[in-house]
Every structure is written in C-alpha cells, then in structure tokens.
Amino acid sequence: MDLFSRSWTALLTAVAEIPDRDFARPSGCAGRLVRDLVCHLVIDAQDVLITLATPAATEPTVDAVTYWHIQDHPPTGEDPLDALTVRPAAAYGDPHLLRFHLDDVGSAAGRAARLADPHARVGTRDEVLTVADYLGAYVLEWTLHHLDLVAHLPDARTRPPEEGLARSRAMLEKIARTAFPTSFTDRDALLIGTGRRTPTDAQRTELRATAGRFPLTLA
Image (cartoon, rainbow, N blue to C red; front, side):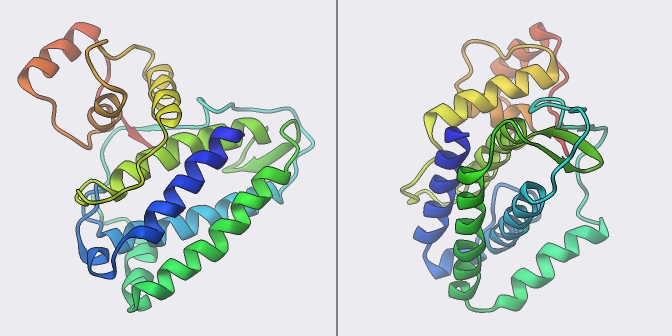
C-alpha cells in the first residue's frame, strides 16, 4: 500500500510539473495526447474512490496479479469508451482546469487509500479482492501511465519510483508466466512487454528464447 501511495504521488507530481504547451503533445498511449492521458487518470482516481467505497462480504476471487486480463488484440481507438476520455479532455480547454481536477480527485483517492484497511474486501469489475491487492494492482497501472506521460517529454523531472518499476516488472512476468531477459532494464521490460516500444533485433532474439507471450495488452 505504501508503494501505491508513492507511485501515485510521483505521477500526480509529474502531471503538476507539465507546462501547459506540453498537454497537446503525444503520450506513450497510442492515439492519446498528454491531456487525454491526464483525463484518463481522473477517471482512474474516481474508480479508486468508488472501489474503496464498495465493500464485499464474499471471499476474494482475484489478487493483484489475476486482477489483470490479457486481451487478444491491442486497442484500436474505436471503442466508444475511448471517446469518454478524449472528448472531455478537449473540452477542458485550459490545461490548468484539467490539472486542478486531477489534483482534487487524485488527492482524495490517495487519502482514501492511506486510510483503507488493507485486509478489507472490495468489489470491482464483478470481482472481489482485498484492498491491499487492489492497490497493489494499481501500482502497475500508475507505473505504466507514468511512463506513458513522460514518453515524449524529455524535460520531465519526476519519474516513476524505482521500486514501482521493479514491482511492475515482477507483476508483468507473473501475468505472462515467464521472465524477461536479465539484460532488460525494468523500464525496457515494461515498455517492450506491453507493446509500448519496439524491441531491437538483439532484444527480439532474447525474447524469443523466453518463449514469452509478448507484447501483452492488459485490461
């Protein structure tokens, strides 16, 4: 749970540091601008608040790893739900308003996470899991989106915590049921493993040796 807080705080800080002009730049999410990604983070923060306020009485059905589903194809951008991010992001107009909304909702989500009982059970996506596992799953979400946020922002000062990168790599390896080559940095493993970056020829050869199912599209 502490790693959730550190990863989320780092991501909120990174957004707060982005100059207004950079909100119109591409992000690491295919087809999404930085402003679209920030709007998606607002929705993520709302999901955290909703889930932490949705107690469950039954036994957990998933944990931090099995929470994630593997899709058989990457997103095309044609899903109607994508418009729920892109259109509102454009409607904000002034990046300050979007930045303020994320800070407002995001701070509340962070406080709710710190106050939550890690052993309590919550329900989301028709599944039940402990608060600790739910927040643990979101370490991967925050880390990947932090990498997306700064993908084309070379001057970005705040980067994902090293512990978050390492934990996210370990989770992705468990999801894929295979380990990345030891020559891969945690950042390389996450970007290549989720299709956010194309591997070099040498890296592609190493990946073949792992017999892994990369890249993975997570949902």
